[in-house]
Length: 161
Image (cartoon, rainbow, N blue to C red; front, side):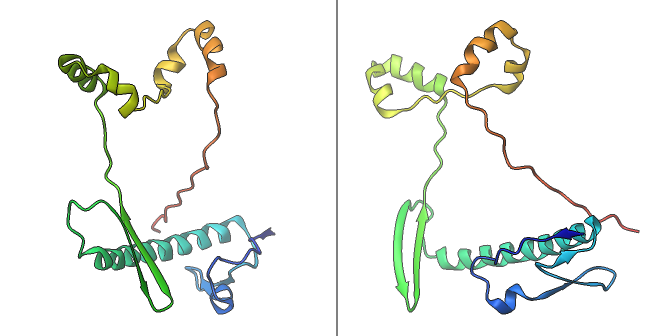
């Protein structure tokens, strides 16, 4: 028997935490209770994922309504209080820099001295080339690299019968 986490869901009421979830075949599995099989866990995952996708869609629609008054080119943050709610709306622009164009432009106008002051160069590993590089090269350079595993991803699809 597999056990689901006993940890409460952040922000959920006791009633919400004790809700029952109905599996596809009509079998009822209570959240945070022992699951009978790996299949039950997959079924619960599938149901939670569907609920999550609906909640995300609805949350994004509400966020769109709350931010519809902002000008397209607005960047910054604003705070508003409404009853028991404090709402902070912020937007940052993503800025991508073409390193080659930047350096050529700086050379053209004699602005190279400003580059280290206005820009950060962040080395990143080109994984494909790294894997193909000679071992004697990567063995020496790897001491400058910290590798941490990412979160394992799970995708479950429902096979139609």
